[in-house]
Length: 480
Length: 145
Image (cartoon, rainbow over all chains, first blue to last red; front, side):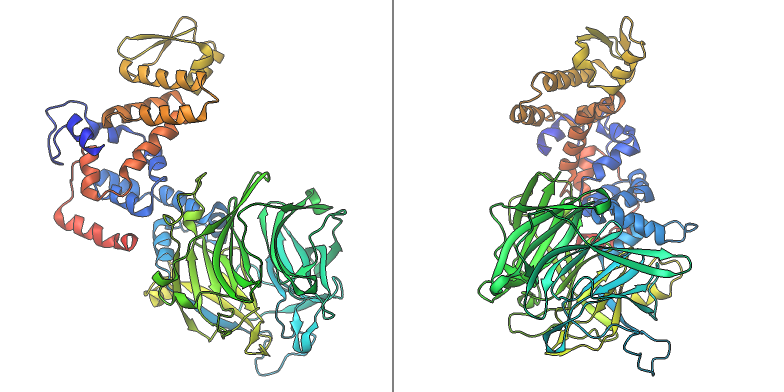
């Protein structure tokens, strides 16, 4: 193609005066309005955009435009991520989008900090002031608050308490936990709890009589001016169809009012491989469960993660399969307009990833952070070792608006192991994490460390950019 | 039938139902500016003929997805200058499908090319000094790992 084009236009010399053929493309590319050059550039990967901008001065200044880079950030990270970032930022300082994109692209470490639950760290907090240690609970960020429910503790006993801590927009060093309610919903662990709009949707779980559940609950936080926070839990009316009871499944919100669940351990301890979608009515008054049956579909498992990465796509990773083996497969779930669903396996080449052989995981956490990447932390590997490592999985190429994914093998994910600096995050599994609205901070609570439950300390994680991390923190113009 | 006049005086006849794929023409008709013929001073004859070929095909074979796909693939096999002229015309005439197709084509041409190859394909003159160019490459090295 290129050959034919060159023979049609003038000579190849980039500095030619093109006197041989008038009205050549040299003039035309400059006549195209900026908007259309942008819409061409937005279909390209970053390195091609930058190449384009390195051709001449005019195009360089065009590709340095903040408007273009904000669009690129939206394209690669998702619009809601960018909107949240704008909301959390000082409006008088314009955001340097290209700089931010570059920093996130070069992300190589996380900064961990243990958060304190009392003003005086020396005094042990009273038992009703902080949530007790637990694992397989749920932790969510909703309405500016951290919300924790249930979980299992020593002796295999379940918990049924709900705790809330108001966070706002910034990472706070000291948390004020407030116990909201007890015994509703009934105690359980291994349930799933996801944020849908302003509410929480909780499903299933196991209680300490090993009874698996399949009830669905809606929780709403209301912040009052004077009386502080109240939370209401109510049982959702789902009619006669519901997924079989289970625990240790995974769930996530895939649309404004839809929740996806997959797998888990069902009654009599069998691992499940079924996919269900809960369709909620407006005002979340009732819901309808629909089973999604497609081929292929991920093999049965428990202790895996489901993370919505934007648009119509959700990523499933790891877990423990039917043969009690720890899995490392990666699957993509696509949901179009609620009528076309499919699972697609994404190939992983463990050999090509540094330290990749430690990747099979169960009881890990996978959270979407700023930059549209998945932060995977902890869990157990195939040798039943608890891990304390952080992995970044770049899923931005799966968020592109492409109708058909290219042939398997052409799309390779990028796995990167991050350094952890600051406080020791500890080796843990069956902990819970959630990110705040800006996607810059990740909260971790609980989990199990080598058979012993972790002391009930909440840890906060903050990311930092590349090797210049010290500069970033000190620099007043940095938006991190 | 609608009559369209290109910038260089060529005249084209096209059915109204086909022509309204162009939002610009559609609004002109709705606003009753199209009594005898519609002047299109921003599009030359050659380009207008090509654009009309596109919208005629997309009107008559509307449901034939496979056919349209192969038509589109052949349609964009033109030289650089003509492709840009079509982009400008599709923009002026506000024909979304054609704009998407041509922008995607240009994007596909740029993808995976080096800076020198991009310059060659678009006949862009390099007006950087060697030092400026070296600095640019250095600044952007992060994206090319």
